[in-house]
Structures are given as C-alpha cells and as structure tokens.
Image (cartoon, rainbow, N blue to C red; front, top):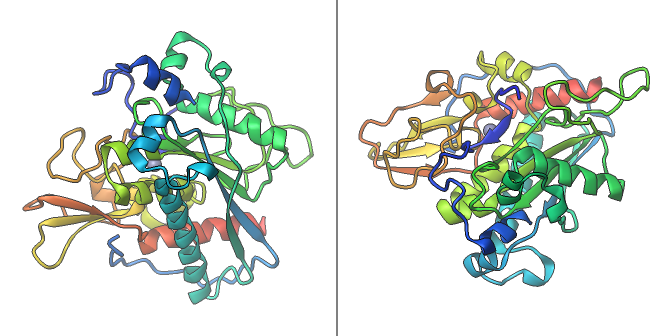
Length: 344
Ligand SMILES: [Zn+2]
C-alpha cells in the first residue's frame, strides 16, 4: 500500500508496545494550539459557496464494557460516552473556526457547515478476514465495514465527511485513526465526469464512494493519553478530509498535512510545548518520549519538524499541551480546499 501523509496516524506494524497481546475479552471487544503566529497570507479571491452545504456526520462505533468502565457510564443509553461528546464538540468548534476564518477574509460566502450525530455503527466479526484481522482489524478493514454500513443506509454524499469514533485502545493497526484514498477528502466522488464508475484505487483495491470517510480511535487517546489528545485527534482526522497535498503545499511549501501544524513553547517559562491539531503525534522525536504528556503513539506518516509552520524544539521542555486550536496555515489550507471543491 502506498504510504503518503494520508493513512494511519500513530499506528505500528505489530512489533509495537501492545504487539498483539490482548485478552480474549479485549479481542472481542476491540472489534467491535497554540494559535501559532504564522506568516500566512490569506488569499483574497472571492469564490463563493453559494448555497453549498458541507456536512460532517459523526458516528459512534461500539464501545466495549471496559470502555464504559474507563469513560464512565454517562451517555451509555445513547452510545455516546463523554469522550465522544467532547470529541464531537471539538470537531464542531473547529469547523466553525474554518467558517469564521473564511468569513473574515470574505471568502466562501454563504457556506454552511453542519456537524451532526449519526446513529451507531456496528462492525461485525465477519468484517474481519484472516486471524490477524480478527485480533486487530486494520484501518482499511474498519473503513471498509464503515463504508458498507453507510452505503446500506444510503447516506453517502459527495459533500459529506463521515467520521467514525471507535474505542479500540489495543488496536495498534488502527493507531489513532486515519483516512485512506480514494475517500480521504470531502468532495470525493464514486463517478468520473462522464458518469461512469471510477475504478478501484489501484494501490488499495478499495472501491470509491461519494464523500470522505475517517476513523478516530478515541479509545486509544483516552486510555493512553488524555482528553486534550482526544479532542486534538478528533480534529486532526476530520481536518485531514479538508486537506490535500496540493493545498498543503500551496500554503506551507510542504505537501504533508501534518506540517501545517505547530509545536510552540509557551511564553511564560518555555517549558511547555503546545501542540496544535495537525501536529498531534508528529511533534515529538520518533518513538522517544521526552516529556510527560506526549502522545503515546508516535505518528508514522510524513512530518518534518523543519517544515512545520512552527516548531520551537524541545530544549527545556518538560511537558506538552495539546490544543484544540488549529494554526492559521491549517485554516487557510482548509479554506482553499473548500474553495476549490465547491467551485469545481
Ligand atoms: Zn494524520
């Protein structure tokens, strides 16, 4: 499979810390900003969105009993534990920021972005193929099961991003989550311009559908990290679907979405490194924890600290803080992507 910046965030291939050592119960269960100062110059074109309506729908995946034990039972009757609620609110606030940013620069006028809850998604054991899949379904398998359920519900639309919140803290193959082509960005379509079906992505054999699909493993952020990482990661995976290598490069001279993020030392004593959503899991040195509070699954995708919109380094840093505020570069790139997609 071609690995680009799109793909699995913070996953390991099986030799990781949790290398497949799961109890039978877990195994059954698991299936189931630093507003960094930036030198970004906003464009001033006036592509309008007319009556365009962009939608993000967030679906709760199965939460195993140990998940409820960890998260608390509030929301159990609706399949919405508190971490899912907080992740949802973080996504909602972020897309409002994107809209506000565009509005401040008189762009995407008339754009409406709706963030709403979808009904629960179940992914049955049959969605897993081989024994390896049974232990820890891959991101691709989880996305495929998600796609099939959405397809049956007939809710796949070009201008919708579908986000699955899953609780699989031991699934090192899904890691923190991710997106995969050919449905990695909102505006994706299953049909070519001439109306014929697009053939499956040759690298992946995945069948394209309308819209974007993303998975966020809030079980991993909650169990291994913290609520701020949960919020930060929910934003991260959702924003991937509003970014492409082309817009990332146009804004930040790097085609990697993660480089749109920033890691900024706090101004009071410089000992706290504040990490913005797209930099989550990519802000630290590879696989080495240098400070308390660092995201536990280091990212595997692209990310070059020198290419970040800002990275202040680790000198004297003894803790990290994960903010829910994307950088201006991230907002600019998402705005450009929406301009391009909605005017196309
Ligand atoms: Zn990512």
